[in-house]
Every structure is written in C-alpha cells, then in structure tokens.
Length: 331
Ligand SMILES: NC(=O)c1ccc[n+]([C@@H]2O[C@H](COP(=O)([O-])OP(=O)(O)OC[C@H]3O[C@@H](n4cnc5c(N)ncnc54)[C@H](OP(=O)(O)O)[C@@H]3O)[C@@H](O)[C@H]2O)c1
Image 1: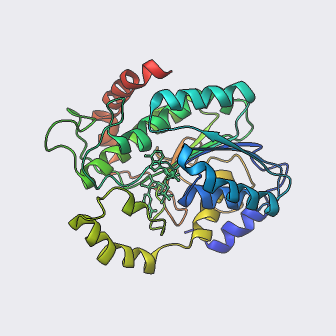
Image 2: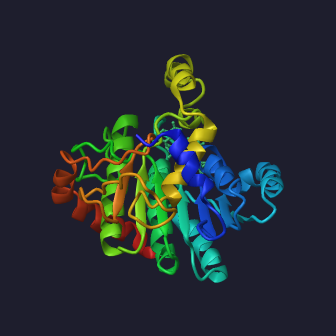
Image 3: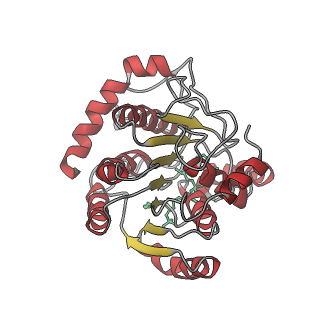
C-alpha cells in the first residue's frame, strides 16, 4: 500500500515543471473526477483543464469553476459541453479539443455509473452505461492519442474496476443485447474486462503513453443511486444497506482525489512523471516497465495474474475487433 502521507508528499512535488499542462477530464463534473480536478488545481501549478460535461451540468459547474480560480488563479478551466454517452458527440468534443491543442498530457475518464437498473439504450443503440464506461472512453483515447504522444509523461486513467477482472466474459454477446444477458453484476464485469483488454492493447501499441485502469474502492459519490428506479426494491436495498456501508467505509472525497492525482502524475507507474523513490508498480504483464497498470484504491498494482492470461488468449482479439466495428464510424 502507498500510504496517504506518501501520496500527499508526492503530490506536493507537482509544480509548473511536473504538472500536466493540458488535462482533459470526462466525468469531472461529479465524484472522483471532480475531486481529482480539485486536487490538481490545488497544487497551484499552471494547468489548462478541459472539463467535459453535459448541458444539465453546465450551470452547477460555473460555481465550481469559480471556486477553482480562487484556489489557483494560474489554472485555466475550459468548460466543454458534450453529451458523451453518444459517440457522435464524443467525436465532436474531441474535434473541439484537437482544434485548440497540439498536445494533451493527461486524460481522466470517469463518466458512467453502475448498471443496476433496467437496460436502456442511447439513440445510437448502445446500452447507456456501456457507452459511458467503455465505448466513449475508448473513443476519447483513440482520438486524443496523437496529442498524448506529444507530451513528455502522458497518462490515461480510466476509473472503473481495474484488477477485479474475472475469466467470465460473454464473447458471443459483447454488448449484452440478448434477453437475459444484461444484469448489474454481469454488465459491470463485462465492461471492466472490455476496459482492461482494450487498454492493455493500446498500451502495448503506444509505449510512450502510460495507461491506468483504476478501481477506486468505495467513494461516497451517490454513483450507485444513478441507475436504479428510485421506487424499486433495488433502490431501497441500496439506500438501506449499501449506502450506509459505503458511508462508513468509503475513502474520503479528499483522499480519493489525492490518490487519483498521485496515480495520474507519479513515476511510480511506468517511470515517467513526478519522481518516485519507492517501489515501482508492476504492470499488467507483470513487469516493472511502462504499459497498463491495474491500480486499486490503496494505489497498489496487480497484474491479476490468474485471470489475465486467459482473457488475453480468448477475449482480447474479439473485444478489439468488435470495438473497432462499433467505433469505426466515429473515428
Ligand atoms: N464511487 C464508487 O464507489 C465507485 C466504485 C467503483 C467504481 N466506480 C465507477 O467509477 C466511475 C466514477 O465514479 P464516481 O463515483 O466518480 O461517479 P459519479 O460521481 O456518479 O460521476 C459520474 C460521472 O458520469 C457522468 N454521467 C452520469 N450519467 C451520465 C449520462 N447519462 N450522460 C453523460 N454523463 C453522465 C456524470 O455527469 P453529471 O455530473 O452530468 O451527472 C459524472 O460526471 C464510474 O464509472 C463508477 O461506476 C465508482
């Protein structure tokens, strides 16, 4: 475990020279994304942040952005409106960023919520949480990779459940469209595996970029409440059982933000970034080298060695081919 003191000490070293100069947050309007934006801005470094969010979040974000300017007048926060559950919108937002920037140092992906409600599809025919937690995230990466390649220590962080993969993936119905295939736990596992497999492939093909799939543990953001119909039994179970547990055992908002800032900036993961004197993290290929890191809420890395070779062999190619088919029209 990386102690909270070590995390804070490392983050205290973030300055104009080591901070990501251009950062893109997709999901920074709430929860872990928002805590990490605040932690980054609080370093006092010169940063330009693209805060991507949907129209309904624009007004509440105005006050947050003003708060950020008080914390750090050197920060520049660019509100970038986009309905990122739609891939066409994701592409449009990427084009906006690409038209303004020649490099991106850091891409932080947290949009989405636990798929515990009934299956709902976007206008593009994708299950909404799969689009948010997988397809849209991968599309952001694919569009912004050329700009990430221009940075000195580029990082991509996708927050979902890195390291929690099991060898149970539905390869015949990757989008869980057939009756009976969609369900909260099954869907969350499916999207987790799809994240890890595609991130690992991208990491292998782009060795100049560090990739992290983070499992944040419990953080009391209300995320669990987003999916269930408020009057359903599931919602009552969450409210009566799960939420009190999350309240008791969750990481604080501040610690979650600091830990994700650490993951996003420290050389502990792959050797590039804020200098790190401790043990180097082990990537998904069990090496102390760059690549994809499966990182938990204590900032420990796991190669998930019992499961990953099986997934690599039987699932990675199929997930990649299918994802290419889905994403191709938006590339
Ligand atoms: N919190 C936890 O304990 C926990 C544990 C494990 C995994 N995770 C996963 O980690 C990720 C981040 O979690 P979090 O707790 O930070 O989540 P959160 O506070 O609920 O924030 C989720 C983000 O997703 C956006 N979003 C939600 N529905 C959307 C929609 N239909 N269209 C566009 N954007 C939408 C939200 O935008 P708005 O602000 O506009 O609503 C917000 O920026 C999620 O994928 C979550 O499932 C969380």
